[in-house]
Image (cartoon, rainbow, N blue to C red):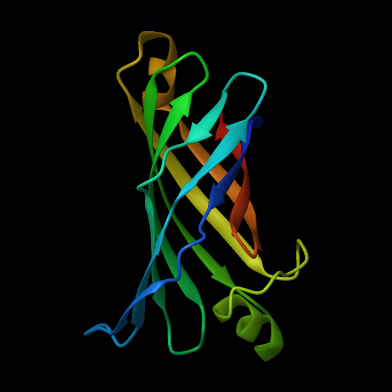
Length: 153
């Protein structure tokens, strides 16, 4: 049986314009969103998102997005955590898809925004993260995404 336990809520700040790579051989459009910072907070884990991460996006011809994200988190009290996640984001209508592509706000639940998360750390009291899978659901604000992340137990 799969159970979920809340892990944290994370806000990644993405304030720089996207770096548009353009059409790539897969027939998709590639763009890179540079992460400038952010924060995360949960009952067992909290801290800040360090600058330098990236959200590497493939946009399909139908507007759906494939997400590939790499972040470094700094836990409260010190200690670094490497967080990676892949995901999908799409919407049920052309209008929602237009808003997604233009980085416009969308009310929670108007689109499909899901991620699969993994962690790596060398911090002894956080090593339990190395053996955990997490999942999340997101929403996008003008300055970056917000995810609610759950540990799969």
